[in-house]
Structures are given as structure tokens and as C-alpha cells.
Image (cartoon, rainbow, N blue to C red; front, side):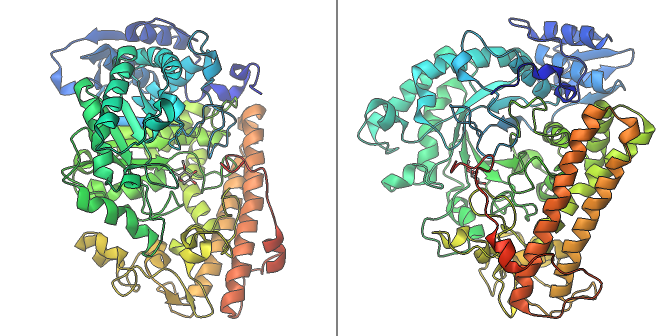
Length: 634
Ligand code: GCW
């Protein structure tokens, strides 16, 4: 059920001034005027094509409240930014493609969604778009997002049917004046499913002709269509390997069909073999690195930030910096599938900056990373994101994809000021909460470089003991490799060798357990429980310490928020406090369940000063959950 009047909820407004509402048919300049009108402030807008240094998306905010840009789209971006911060400056995006991808099924279910059902109600399109879509477009545009894909990468072939394209064209028309281009997901077997072709083999002439015609049809309806997003030969999706062809042959099939129209294909590199024999973290690199010279220029390879799967912390994916001359796009997950859904506070700019550091170090975000995409955390709940603090992640995603050098602290400060106001009693404290939050979540779930300890399938809650899934590399036990003697995944040269996929400088940083940043310790190394760390504790003691530290942090963050009650409207303060209460409970559950389990394996003395788990391991193992939000096995 859709909330009747979501706009009446105080969280609906996001970081923005009041909305001017739907503006069908308005030009970007008219939208900018309407936005200023509704904010009650006015700048003068100057379209000046001679300012080529601003590109098509950038702008200058000049003294005397002047916004200057070479395009209307640039003027609108500049207006939104001027409304956020008036100080004179020039802003030009560092990354060309800044895209939200929704994992929304056509029936409204949001895969890994924790904020209700899809914002895209296709039954009302093309004629009666939900007025909320204009507010969605302005929120995206206000943080520099310039592309969206509203359909799930686990794609339905129906997305490419004429009747659906007619609806999609209406959405593209609505988004266009906001400077946002529409992409769609393509199911690789669509020629067979939609038109009965006997094959989807990328080298088959009939298949090639099918895609050529399909793309021509799309561009007739949507002249500025962005392109296609494809998940192929990954987790059961069809793809070129079904016909003995490579990912490059598959991607190039679509690239050729898109080329005459100027579109692009975002081809995902989230692949792992059906018969796991090698380290799962190594597989995407093994598959894609040898193909790097074979992709057509219209292909952008979309790579998750880390080599496994959106874990609370991962080292950056070694495909970044490796794929040239092909282009890489970095994929973030704004929805917190592995970071506590919408009930935990985890400000993700901290995580994203960590994984952007390597490409930034190489001095070339635009070379190593030609685009940044984020899996949206949006749904039809009045708060859009499921909670106040998850709004900060949507904001941070936009800001960081515009400028990957921005410091998490400045993004946090900006969001807090725009969302909660400048009250000095509030601003600094909430900024501090955001900045401490990611590390807290990492430590309550997967400290010391552990990964993928979540409950199977729905990924809710801890299940480090789970070992019964059909694939070895879906099981937490595969990832942590703990037994009586030790814990961790040896990815060094003596182990899986995955570390050798990184450039020498990073190998040096991570190859020695004595010098590695402890945050990546058990990601790359398998160590005995009694191995001594630089902290003065053994591996076992450090694990206990970090789980407890994480929970203390969550408690401290909750306390800060509780203390802000007098300064914030109840309707804003109370729901967020309730979420923090859930986080507190779940963090303790995570800590105690994981320590009960690891403790049962290692059988070492319980470190002094740390309370033992509240329940027995058997009790934690007996906890079952069904009907969890966002679970595709619903
Ligand atoms: O993280 C995993 C999710 C799947 C998702 C997949 C992917 C869309 O559990 O739900 O499928 O990643 O990124 O393709």
C-alpha cells in the first residue's frame, strides 16, 4: 500500500527546501526559477556558452549571486548548489557518469530494498505519473546524479517490450529537464523470450539484427536514451557464455547496436564461476582482465568496489587500474544489504572514500573510474530511504560521485546543515555520529577483515556457522575459514594468490601480517588464534575486543542522539531513536552470536573484562527469520 500523502511527513523533504511540486513540460531554466521561488531566494542565471572550462554539467557561482553555465542543465545544477551554499566558486564534475541503479522489479518489489515498494509504479505510466517522481528527479539533480536505471539487473525481458518502452519514454521525458538520462536493464536472452528466436548467441546474425532493431526502436521513443545495464552469466542470469562466447563478445553485441545512437552499455563484472575451484575474490579479475583489449569503446565495465560483494569493508577491487584501455565504472551499494538494512546507522561516504583511495592515488579517477553508480536505497516510504540517516547516504552518493575527493566530514556537515539546520547544539554532534558510524558497524559485524558472516539468502543477522548452502562459496564458513587452530582467508602467494592481482605497492602493504592494516588482516591472512598482534592482544583477544568496541560505539552514538531530543522536532527525532534502539539490540546479537561461535571453535580463555555472550551458541543458531524485507526468495 502506498502512503496516501507521503509529502506530509517531515522526512519527505530530504535535504531540500520545500518542493515546487510537479512541473510537467518545464525547461531546466523554468525549473530553476520555480525552485528559487519556492526557496524564497533568488540568484541571476547566465547562460554563457563561451565558458568552455565548465563543460556541459559544470557551473560557476559568481559574486553577487550569479549562476553561470554553458547549458541549461548546468544552470539548474548550479541553482541547486547555490541554494545549498552561496559562496562563489566553480564546480565541474570529476566523473562523467553519476548514476542511480534501482533493483526494482516491474511488479514493485525492490530487491534488497528496505524502504517500501518501488517508486516506479508502471501501471500509472505513461499518462498519470506519480507526482512524487518530480520530487525524486529534483532530489537526484540537486546532488548531481545525471542518470538512472529504474529496472532490476536481475532483469525481466519484458523491459524491452514496446508497451513497456512506451511507459519508459514517459519517465525519460519527465527526467530530461532535470539533466537525468534514462538507462534500462537488458536480459541477454530477450530475443528468445520476446520474439522466439532460437538462440541469443551474440555471434548469430539474426540475434545481432534483433538488437540493432531493438535499439533503433528505443531511440525512436527516447532520443537521448543512455544505454543498457547488463548482468550476464552471473547468479543464474543468461549470457554469452551459454553459447561458449566471452563477456567481451556479449558486451560488444550490444555496444554495436548502441553505437550509431551514442549510447553505452554498462556490463557488470560481478561474476563468479558456477564450479568454484578458485578463490571467489579472484574470479572476476581472472575473467575480465584478459579481455581488457577486446571491449568496444561504448562498453563501460561496471565493477563492485570490492572483489566479493558489497561487504561492510573490502579492499578495493583489483580490476580498477587494470582494465585500460577499457573503461571501468565503480559500483556502490547505497542500500545497506550487508550493513544493517535501514535500521542501522552507517554513513557510507567513509567506506566509499576508502575504496576510491586507490584509483585516486593513481592520479586518475577519470582514467581508472569513468563513472560511479550506486544501487539505490529508495522506496515509497515517506522517508524515501527507510530512515533519516539513510537519506545521508543518497546525498553522499551524489556528492561523492560528483567529486570523489570530497572528505566524508565535509559531506556529513553539509547534509546535517541542510537537513537538520544550523543549530550548533545539533550540527557538530550529528556530524560526529555519522563519522563514527561505519567503523562501528564493521566492528559489530565483520571486524578485522572478516566478511560475509550474514544469514543466508536474506542476509539479516549473524550466521557465521552456516555451511549448508548448495555452493561452498555462499557459506560464511567458506569466507572465515575458522577452525580449532585459526581464522582468516589466506590470499597471499602461499594461499589463494589473489593478493597478486594487486599492483606491487598494494601487495607490499598487505602481504605481511605484521605490517598490514588490521582492518584487512583476516581478509588476506589465515592466522593462529594465539598469533600476537601489534595491539598487544592475540587474534582471539582482538576479535573479542573489536566486537565489544563496536557495540560500545553504537551505544555512544545512540546516547548522542538521545541527548538531542530537546533540539529536534519529535517527528524527526523519535523514529531515528527507535532505529538506533534496534541497532543496539542487533549489534549485541551480532557480537554475542559471533563470539559464541568463534569461541566454541578456538576454545581459548575468555579475555578478562569482556562480558560473555548472553545466550548459548545453540540458542543463537536456533534463531530463524522469515519474511525479511528485500529478500528475492520472498
Ligand atoms: O549482493 C548480491 C545480492 C543480489 C544481487 C547481486 C548483484 C541483484 O545479494 O540480490 O542481485 O548481488 O549485484 O547482482
